[in-house]
Each structure stands twice: as structure tokens, then as C-alpha cells.
Amino acid sequence: MKQRIPFILVAIVIAVVIFLWWRSRGANANVTASGTVEATEAQLGFQASGRIETVRAHEGDAARAGEVLAQLDTVETAARRAQAIAQAVAARATLLDLERGARPQEIAQAKSALDAAEQRRADAARDLDRARQLFGDEVLSQEALDKAQTAFEIAAAQRDQASEQYDLVRAGARAEQIAAQRAVLAQTEAAVRTLDATLANMTIRAPFDGVITVRAREPGEIVQAGSGVVTLMDPNDRWVRIYIPENRIGAVALGDSAEIRSDTDPGHAYGGRVIFIASEAEFTPKAVQTREERVRLVFAVKVRITSDRSGDLKPGMSADVHLFPRP
Image (tube, rainbow, N blue to C red):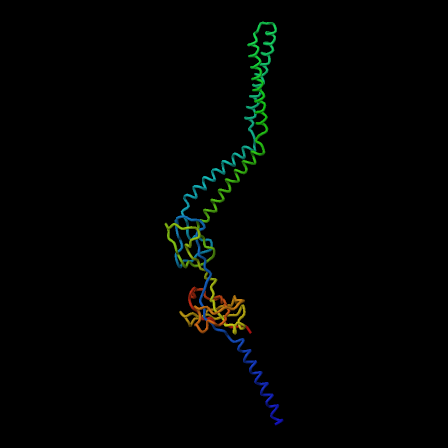
């Protein structure tokens, strides 16, 4: 009996070792799941409303980043931009005129007017002196003296007015006038930039290299801002979304390699790599599993397609993913 005890202990130790080895092997075993191919897609539309003039993109066409895909009618907006540019040119010319001040010819003209007014005032002053002398000699009437006085006052006022005009011409525009005109110029230039932005928003350009998957509108249609016109898919950013049961998620890690097969060509395997693992579990989506399996908790995993340059795996296709966890 005493000899059998060590044998039983050895058997228990061997069994524990086998169990631990089997459990470790099971944790690192390959994981297989089914999912759906997805891709980065952009539904592109105009930021402005209007009538579509052209749609250059057709379904299946390849598009380069920056390439024009569709264009709105820009006739009216272009005319308003031309009007805004003309207003900006006029405002800039007015500002330049104010900043430069009066031309030499204008200053000379004002000086001549002042000299003439000064001469008329001097003549009126002499006439008034003679009238006063004659009035004192009782040769001139009071009425004639009053007329000479009035003529002198008018000439003096005209001289003062000419002097003020001469000073204004020499001084140029006030700082407040220049500031106000600068504001007018800034306003007109802002209107031009606004219309430039509007014209840019009337063109759809491809934001990245891709393939047109949907052409939703045709030339001549009236569209509102934001309405989808074309859909662009990025073939270089496709993945398969799968769901891993809670008890198997420990065997999956970011960067794990994968083998992807589709129902269309099950004999052809495509390369893949795990790029995302959900941080929280969820119930199995109804569209993926049976009623019995829906109650299980799963983690969403994204496996990027790394070797399908021909684009065989298209969005919406079902695919089987075989993961190869790293040791």
C-alpha cells in the first residue's frame, strides 16, 4: 500500500502537467471567425446648393486625390465675384487717393484762388477807405458808404473761405476718413474671398485616391448643400469585422496576422492583420449569429486586408478569417 502512494502522486503530477500544457496550447490555438468586408467610404456632396453642371465620375472609375468629380453651375456666382472685384478695385483706388493727398496741381489751384481772394479783399478795403473819406467830405451818401462796407465784408469772407480751402488741400484727408475707407476696402475684399470660397464649394474633389462606388446624381439636377452626389471608397483601407467570443479574446492581440477567405473564391487566401480590438464586450449582433449564440458576449475585432491589390474583397462580402496569434 505504501508503494502505491508515490505512483498515485506521480500520476497526478503528470495529469496536471498534461492539463496545463493542453490549456496553454488551447489559449494560443488559432482563432477562426466569420465577418463582413468593410471599407472607408466617403459620401461626397456640394457645400453649396445649385444646379449640377457636370458629373465626371462614373461607378467603377478610379479617382486621384484632388481630381474634380462634379461641378455646379457657377455662372451667377462668377458674375457676383467679378462685381465684388470691381468694387474692391474702386475702394482701393479711393484709399490710395486719400493717402497720397492732393496733387501739386490741386494745391497750386487752391493757392491761386486764395491769392485772387486776397486781392479782391485788398481792393474792397481801399474802396471802403475812399468811401469813408468822401462821406466825411459830404460828397458820398450814406447808402454808398454802406455798399462799400458790405462789399468789403463779402470780399473778406471769401478770402477767409479760400484760405481755409487752401489749408484743407495742403493737409489732405483726415485720419478718420482714411480709416473709414480702409474699412470699406477690407469689406469689399472679404466679399471677394467669400465668393471664392463659394465657388470652391461648388466643386467636388476627391479627398483621397479611391474608386467611385455610387453615382447618385446626374447633370441638370438641383441639389441642396450636403446632398450626396458620389461615393468614394478607399481600396487601401479595407477590413473584415469579426466577433470573438469572450472566452477566446485572450488569444487575440493587436498585430496578429490573419488569413482571409471569401465565399466567392474560397481557395484563394488573402493576408490580414489585427488592427482593432474592442475594449468592451457586447452581445453578438443579430445579423451575424444564430438565436442561440446571440446571448453570448463577444468582442468586435477589425482585421485589415493587407494583400489584395486587385480589389477582389469588396465591401459587403462575407469572409472567413483565420487568426494566427503570436506566441
